[in-house]
Length: 329
Image (cartoon, rainbow, N blue to C red; front, side):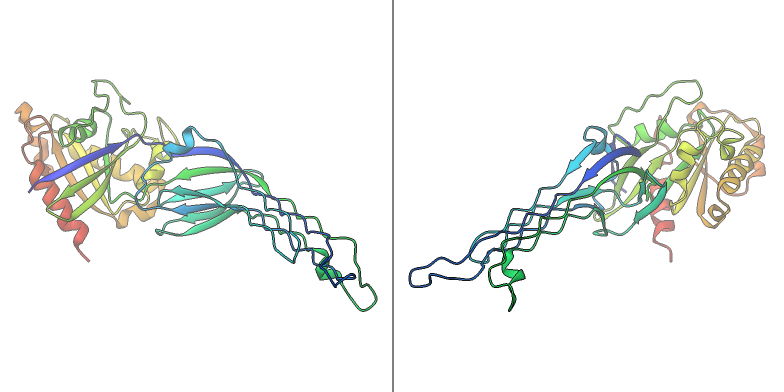
C-alpha cells in the first residue's frame, strides 16, 4: 500500500498583540446646489474600523507564522463624505490558525475561543463603530446641526495562542523507543536522532497519505518518563498534544527488559494526566526488530505489531492497520 509522509516545523505556542481599527469620523457638511441656497445637512457617517478575526483552517498544522509576526493591526474606517456618503469600512485582518487552537486573553487568563471546526471564527478585536454624520441630527428645532460624532476607538488586546493538535495518531513511548526513527523512515524528514534521552524536544506533525485518496495526521511526541503527568521531564509541554488524538501508538524497544511493565507505565502516565485517554484506540508496537534480539518477555503481551524502521519491515502493515482503526465507527 503506497503512502507519503510530509513533515512541518511544529510550533504550538505564541503570544501576539491584536489591534482593531478605529471608526471614521462623521462628516459635517450641508447641501449646496444651484437654486438650493439653504440646503440641509448632508454629512455622511464614518466607516467602521476593521476587526481582527481568527479563522480555523484545516490546511494548517502549526503556529509557525506567528513565530515571526507578533502584532496584527486592522485598518481604520474612513471619514464620512458629503452627499450623505458613508466612509469606507476598514479592512479586517483575518488570521488563519490550525484546528485545535486555544485563544486566551492574557489580561485575565480566560480562554476566549477553542477553534476545532474548519471555518470557525473568533473576533479577537472588534473594529470601532463609525461616527454619525450631521445629517442624523437634523430635527424640527435643529435645522442646521453643525456637529457630528467621532468614530469609536478600536480595541487592543494581548492574546496567548496555544495549539493542542487535532492529530489522528499520536506516537507514545519512552525516550529512544524509535519514534523519530519511525518518522524518518517513512518520510524525507530528518528529525534529530541520537542515543540519549529527549533527542526530540518538541512534537512534529506529519500527514500520511495512503491509498489514492485517504490520509491521516500523525504527531511525534517527545519521550515520556515516569512522572510526566506531573510535569517531570518535558511533562505537560507535550502531553497536551495527546488529548485530541483518535489513536495511540505505544512504541517499545524490542530489547526492553520488561515491555509489559513499561507499556503499563506509559498508559498510567497518560491516564494520570487525563483519564479520558482510556477511551482511545491503541496499537502496541515492538520496534527495532532488525536487531534480531531474542526477548521472551514479549510473550507477556497478547497483541502487538512488529516493525523495523531501518529495514521497513512491518511498516506497510502498520499503516494499513492504522487506516482500518481510524475508519471504524
